[in-house]
Length: 245
Length: 119
Image (cartoon, each protein chain N blue to C red):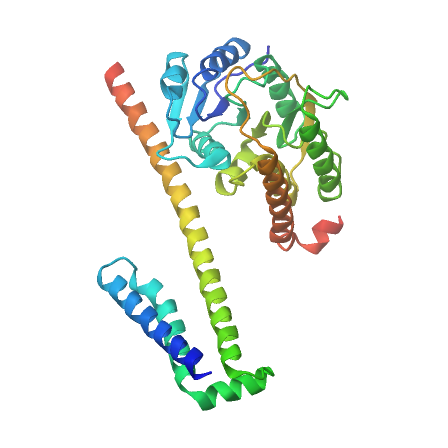
């Protein structure tokens, strides 16, 4: 068990997850005892806030619905203000196995990377994802490979740990919709590094995914555009000399 | 040709009146009405100034001057929509930042209350 002291915050973005968030908070508390747990509630209309508080989490309640990116960024901003060195984000639907948090935390402290991704695919397993999602992930791997300069196995993973340097960047600039893939590009443009560690994926504890085929197409177009905008946006800020080195 | 230009004149005048009435009732802020008023006034002038419209149509290579006016109308609206997209995007960013700040301040207030209650 790693030493979690007071410098690690577990961040759980949640929207209408009353059926799952309590179990997620308890699992996190059991996996990393002593680490504060912050649930960022994206203005749920169910009992997510109450369930999270009853389970022992702190709650950052947004006044209106911002979407995943705005929700996660609010948590990053608070974590940065409160002086945390490390933040690990776990989804509120219970799909990430909290027992993998120590593994992500260890990698975050020992690898020197600014970001650690809990990946379903590091060991070559499919992680039980649907065919459509697996095809999308494969597509984005190909797109990201030349941009990031190294392969990324699970670019859509929401199981992500960041250190304070990345936290400083994300609290200022964070993609607001479908943030995972764009966030990788944002970090890469600042010459930050990431590493993936193998993690397990569990079935959702409750509810179901809101991603429909039409939304999948919108997702692909939106993320592709976001990636290329970020490439264009930050390329000019990196001096040519340091790009060559 | 005259009928089409008369319709454009009527529509431009209507747009100007509509925007002015909306500004008067505070439904549109003055700074956002300027774009509409300039666009509508330009269309009004062009639909009445036949010589100017013919010159522009000749310069654009459009044989039928009212078509040139419709092309200009399209361009004006594209520019107006672009400007409002920029404004909406900036407002959305500000709105998100404000919502996050409100949530964080409420969190701090609650923490202070909890601390005070614990003392």
